[in-house]
Length: 414
Image 1 (cartoon, rainbow, N blue to C red):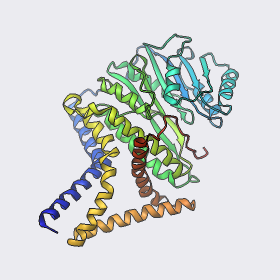
Image 2: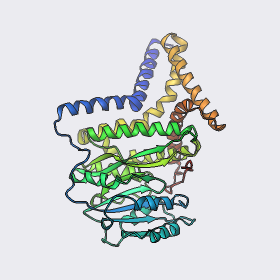
Image 3: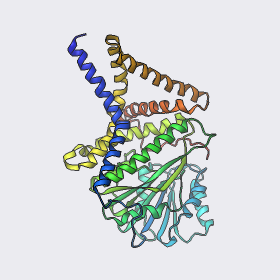
Image 4: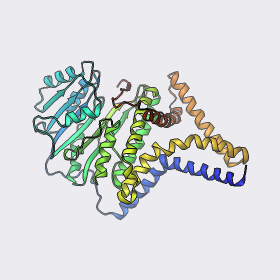
């Protein structure tokens, strides 16, 4: 091996490690530092945890459900228990394409509740996907006509439970005119009896929630999760009907217009973990395909001279995880083998560390197959599953095999 080629491999190896480290941990450390510096230099924070609101706005509360018969009664009850004036909130549950009794159960639950809030249960046999259902709910004619201004749209999933103060805490942020959307916090319910895969999913979302908190404090959340978010109705715009991750794309388009996506940890949506890593993988592959699709459509955000901090956050928090980080992982391993064959020492150590990590991930997979609960092995396993999902998502996207129709993942019993 020539010295020039060896030097090239050394630079490639350490650069790739740097990108992977930055994508998963380095950005979090840098973000923490930037937020600390901002706190020191700023006497008045951009976002107060509980900004004063002169008057509560009207809210349209949307739940898109597909074959959620098991969860829908609890969702209706939880929605009606929210601490919000009944005359200022209307509930729209839409079950397009459902083939079970989700729609009838929801309708009966609302009627039996005696609620004084307006409620609508929309259903049509044709299944066109979540974004089509959401758009139909948003443009519903009803109590307040089309919700085109001075309304807040709150969206949440059918299999989640919200805390009572969630809607009030989110809409309070809209007292700030620069706030275009608000992301709630997603939480994973984990009990000792749960499968060990919940450890990976739970830790991942705890870390994501921390990054979102810091992102919002620096400038903006980089896309909200569909479990719970709110937006100004006047900023809603129909997204392309083939959009796979509509929640992310919708809120990023709001940020692209110059508005901030705030974060409200006091508004949380709780759901159980996926029933298994295989079930979680279905979600991850779909999200991966959607993330890569969104990366193409949000290509203007790469212009850091135009979008500044938003571009920095988007590239650091999302884009690197969707592109270079998963691409570099196998490259790091293969290059490490070549380097360790020519130079011992540090490259032998790094190769051994990689072998141990992937062995732990493989052990996690084997234990998961046998339903054994050794959570320590599921962290590396979950990490590998996440990155494998990016390859599978890219394959589906390029082959046109990723449908916009959402595919339910089985959740652990709550």
